[in-house]
Image (tube, rainbow, N blue to C red; front, side, top):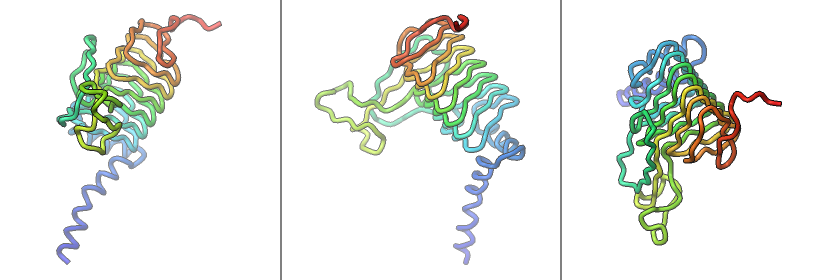
Length: 231
């Protein structure tokens, strides 16, 4: 009987977290704010955290005032300490910290976005918007070893031995007032200047982008001025 009671009692923390993470309405918003206020690196005033948001490495996540983290968003932060091979891409204009996801003020991260900032870092400046289904990867698996690409077999995934994996990482930064449209993908090492707009479904890799432009395509390129009037 005692072991059964202990087993039931051990479920309470998990049940409590489930309530906090998924409860809708005003009570759920308040519970999530109180819960994450003590666990995130910083949680600003007026932040909205919807049900179903996942924070991995919350102590490495910074969220500014009046920002909205929408349903099903996944934020992955922290430092990878494994012995896996890593390809590191430099980003000299990056303003953040390794492994830290910084989300500024008046930002919306829309439903089902994934932001992976592990080991590299992601810096999203003020007044940006990342639309539904978009992905920002400062850290991911790579398909090929750089040390010995011809003779070293690499598997694209985390479920094999560490010496059979290769990772690629590079800090990502979105400048102030950057809009990222539906289902866009931003890859490691990217710097996007302020006032840009990334078009629907674009794949943004390490290229030079001009400020105040429409960025689109695969691979994405800077196009016309953002504020040119459409004919």
